[in-house]
Amino acid sequence: MKNKIKKEKSVVFDEKIDSSINGFSIVLAFIIVGIMLEFDNSFFGVATKSVQITFIIVGILGLMTEIKNLNLSYNIKGLDNLIMGIFLLGITYIMKIYIAPQNWFFIFKYVYEIILFLIMLFSIYGLSRGLIEMIYSLYKNYKENNKKKNLFSSAIVIISQILGLALIVAQIYEIIK
View (cartoon, rainbow, N blue to C red):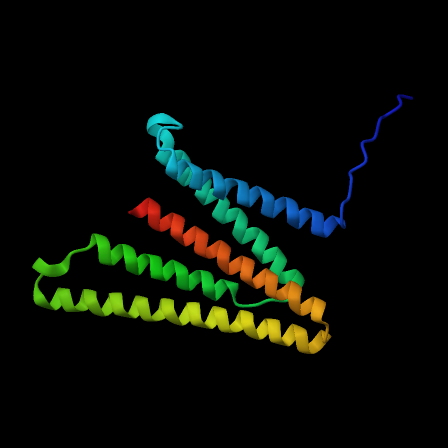
């Protein structure tokens, strides 16, 4: 029989917390590299923009996965509506920038403007509903558990999610610009 050397996995806090920390660290690494590539346009030569977009997309997907896992742990709702609102707001912005209906037949111009308005209305609704659901989840968690520690950790989770999404939106805006 061979002696197998078994490497013990070191646990800092507990396995669940360590897994979340590792996941968010990887996500932050991808997003920060994407931001750094925005400022150093010559790092990968002509492929810098493609690499930057790849890093940001992988960071966004990873962030959504980690946030979903974290929200399940802390029983926080509303992130899906918040993300949908941001997505629709991005579509509204892209449509407003890249589609110029000034020379269209007047009926098509008005239909376009109505569609743009409706998408913007739904995006603001999604953003508002997501934020309200997150705040209510925080309140509900505090009321059920009546622990200040739980309130603080839930608030930190929500604030970090909102700031992470703001960073992603800023990056997408910078890429589009």
